[in-house]
Amino acid sequence: MPRRALFILLPLLLAAAVSAQAQSTAKPTAAGKWLDKRGHAPIHGDAAAGQTKSEVCRACHGQDGNTPVPTFPNLGGQRTDFLYWELIELKHGYRYQSPMTEQLAPLSDQDVRDLAAFFASQPLAHAHDASADPAAIELGERIFHSGDAQRGVPPCQGCHGTNAGGIAQRPGWPILQGQHPAYLAARLRAYRDGDPPNSSNDFIMNGVARGLDDAAIDGLAAWLVSRGGTQHQ
Image (cartoon, rainbow, N blue to C red; front, side, top):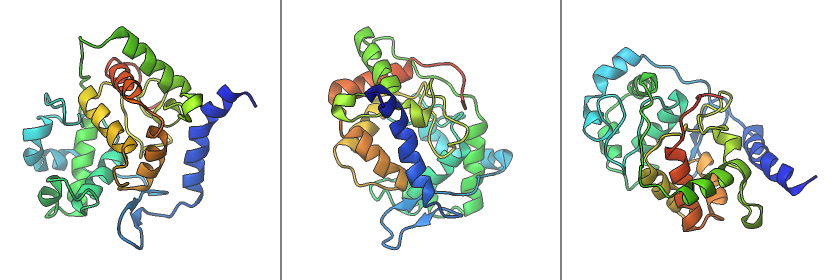
């Protein structure tokens, strides 16, 4: 098999390997150190109820989940499943360093579902970066679509979609298009530099990011913020 074809298939094989041992619902591991997100049932919530519960979120994430603060993620238009499990990670302290754990602690599981449904129902407002270097954007596009075989980096599109707008069959993986580049770059560096995995998805991302140098990370962030296009491919 040609090397390029192998690296296009690699993320698909990784996801298949994770799903092969799927459980009916996601749950903590026996050690309680990371969240197993494999094989969970689809997440549903009441978006209208979530809007009334979202007031505390607005200070950091904006009225509709689209924040002007570049170090915080945009939530508007994100996947319901992804948002729910991210909030569950925070609520139960898998990210021990996050101040959101205390804010989420008193919320019920239905509250979390409603919040996820609300933010997912909002429009995706793309961040912009007029100062992005065209060479960095070109590098990021190449890595996103083709990976970097010499460094063992598979194409990102296998899990996040051709335009980084997500894949319908993988609702637990996030939409990346139009996200703040500062936030994206920080998350990728955390994965690369050995931030302890909080979930089964993180184990995959730790391996992917290990081959990314600073130029590759900045290029990916620059290209992703430039993306529009169709979501949920």
